Image 1 (cartoon, chains in turn orange, blue):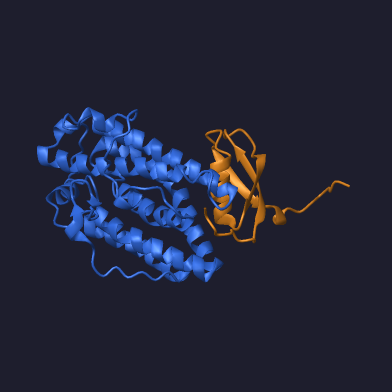
Image 2: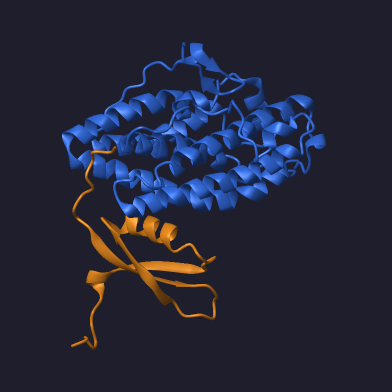
Length: 70
Length: 250
């Protein structure tokens, strides 16, 4: 078995994607990754159910709330 | 200046060129079969769940590329039918000896992901715009998928090297095992077939140039990670140009 422990510095990224030019980007899920590059790799691996036209990841920390749930 | 000639089918190539092209595509296809299998074995063992999923996705991509490459080989009458039969496992694959057994440690996975998958990508990149049309048509999709494999390998190299001295040392050992045979895998620079493929514009780089490109890509990454591996001499005596393997003494 592997004895190496992953680093603890993990960040949550929100994943958005769209399938057609006329579609807006919509939220498809989240990934947890140590950095932007790995977030890209993980999002691409995990959310591969469609032939996406576009996919982006956004660090959850970068989100500015307009209305927050109580 | 006239446009370089383009080739649309095997019978437009002379016998020596066909043989050289078969050898190259066969080596890439077989290596991707075995690499895909080695990746898949880690789908359930990777240190984090997400990398397990990435390992499965990379396996799937490699096997997909294999399918496309075997389809190309099938057009050559010289290629035995059993080589391109994806339903049957063969006893021997033209793939490096370090892939003969499952990758025992995650550090080995990362070394293979970064270095050997990187080498396969370099040779595929060198066939972008290939004068052999059926090949040229397959390249872009493969490269688009390989981009993520390279990111995965690079990122894990950095993470493991940062993680602990033990992990860095283990990585160094794995890189030391994978790198020399990978550099041989491109073939000898005086290989007449390889020279011919470059002359006809089927591949845009000689084996030495491919070695140089891969080394230029890897050296800064390994240096940054503090992974020190010196490859002074390559194991050419044990290298078999037909199978592109370094045959280990029994």
